[in-house]
Image 1 (cartoon, rainbow, N blue to C red):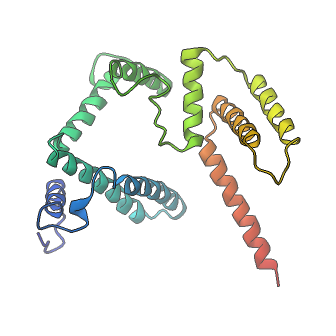
Image 2 (image 1 turned 180 degrees about the horizontal axis):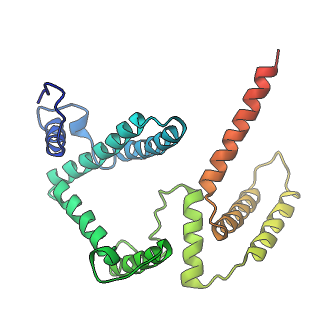
Image 3 (image 1 turned 180 degrees about the vertical axis):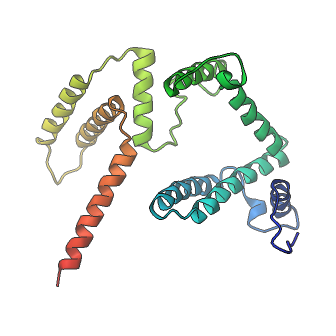
Amino acid sequence: MDKQNNKKYSYEELLEIIKVLRSENGCPWDKVQTHESLKPCMMEEAAELVASIRIFDQTGNPENMREELGDVLLQVVMHAQIASEEGLFTMEDVVDEVSRKMVRRHPHVFGTGSADTPDEVLTNWEEIKKEEKKDKEWISSPLREIPKELPALTRAPKVLKKVDKFYEKGNSYKQDVEMLQKAVDALKTCEPEAYSKELEQIIGDALIELSDIARIYKISQEQVLTDRIEDIIDKYEHMSEKMP
């Protein structure tokens, strides 16, 4: 499958390449991978794709983003090939599934529905998604639907939003601030050099209240914390540069 004259590989050829790599005479590493063993790879490639978007914003060069999109696609195709070998589904099934979902969730484009604003689109999307999730045996409750594999700062506001929606928690911004203040006051009574379950609980409470405040204001905690970490790095790197 060696290419000549810079002719580009096709989507179908990519599927064949992965199939060969997974075959009996294929690559010793690729052919022993499983859905489980590839989980860290998918997480790493997704993070690198997000980083490539930042790099593109900073440089205007799309080369890294193109490469990282390919790496994410590689992971998708690998999982689909493994599933095909297991008799579960094929890459064609994956493409068909997501295509049907996009048509189904965009009735204002492909059907007779209407949505004139992004907010209306999201409202319709959530309603359609809710219907789709009915009777799914792996979803024990609306809260358990949110994957625990998500970073905690991303998962927390999603859980809190559903708590408000389905269980009428009803916390206001003011209540969140009051609870946060209680957690801060409690921290003052803890021994600073001694770990305890009480300290762990207090910090957990403070993080939850901060998560709810961020949710109310539609602030991405992950992005805010990432930006602040970069600020700290910049600050101390500059300080070290000034040292003799």
